[in-house]
Image (tube, rainbow, N blue to C red; front, side, top):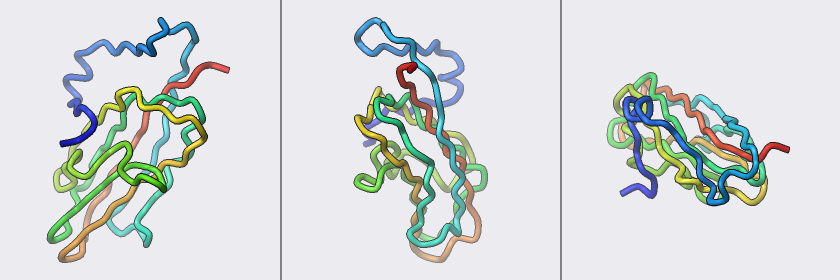
Length: 145
């Protein structure tokens, strides 16, 4: 079971999103995003950098848009995380890599205390994949400077 709640796109469209930091939002928050594309044939070490989450950033959600299904013979695994924890934000099993579609993984307010580089990683086993493409967007808020 994932550490994060899965939300589907229709549920998200129907909900009003309220960000509650526990302090009545006394600071104005800025919504920002990191975005990267990963393909089935990504070179070793099978990762793509999304960029840097700035110190103080609070994760809102990670959106994984599988635009072309990944088709390796045995397993297709896409995770999003850091160099120290490769599935910190999206874990194996959170996304169905074998079907085109959008999955939104809630961040549950997870935050970073220092600038943190975020990576998307794709691994496969069995017969090598001949197709697969995903666009990953990470939404986060940070206090306005």
